[in-house]
Image (tube, rainbow over all chains, first blue to last red):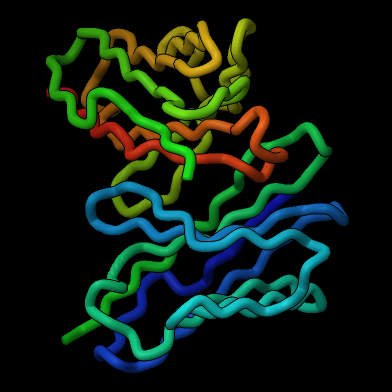
Length: 116
Length: 118
């Protein structure tokens, strides 16, 4: 069975602070994909990153960085020098299972508040 | 990037009426589309997988007679909420898998449709 756990339900930080959103996943498959999405108040999902199970390189995109650790089944997301516009709900997600199975399993999300 | 649209973006209806939501892939072909439902402050829950030219596959606990899905073409899937009730009020989001542009991991989400049943 596939599962994504985002233990942090809600986080509040002051602007310019760094913040890390945790994501732990479960899958029995060797080939899988991990995602992070941002959902601002408008509701539209914004794709942030996709990572396949064979690529453990960490990634940095501007103020965003991701730390993929297969040994701990974690795919954490860090925002550096946070800004008010980063306030949103962030979802970690997983596609795993048989090759023809393309269901995305979402975590429960972390609501991030960046305080001015 | 690939674009998926949904129409309408907002709908308010009376209890007992049926509501149709469209999901279109604008610049790619999608043999598979997915329908999700999201209640306030909750995560996205997959309702069904829509396959072009065949019957949809529903997740456990989703009533197929209440949530009718039609995927008549490679660019359009529709979700009809039949005899809607207030508990059906939710945010409905579709996603589409790009047939030619990548593997199962290449999916694009629509902007969502907010349904309010009075």
